[in-house]
Image (cartoon, rainbow, N blue to C red; front, side):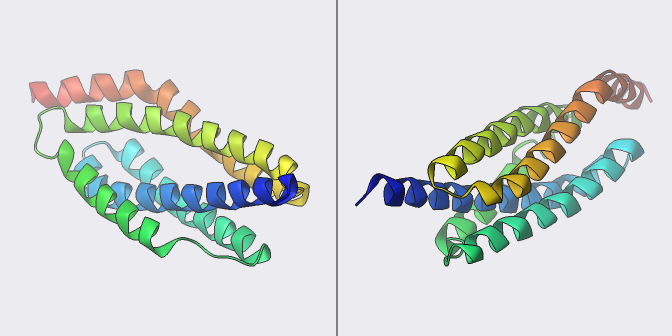
Length: 165
């Protein structure tokens, strides 16, 4: 196997992995959305984030198809199961929404790093034409991460108000 083929294989695996991540995000948000209703701004943002992740997964599908392959079904099933379990990890905890917001901030950092790695892999694999799609998704993840971080004080105060009611 040549270096170019090896790089392409690693890149395609990375695309599949990121697709599984987006699938997990969609499932996790779906499981948590109803519990965010007391926080209207967060609820609206997470509804939009679910739609955005669906779009990002479709973009990854398109990139995989362009390279003559597709997502890993087994990995998708495992990711979906993880999302279901993850949605119940904090369920019922008094501070569930706070824990979920903090986890989402950390997960955004993970996704940004994943897209950065995919950009490097795209270059190594000779798939530079894919970079604008990956950069768009990375920028969207950065925007959401920044939004969550900048709104954290408001979420904390809203949580305290909810607890004192």
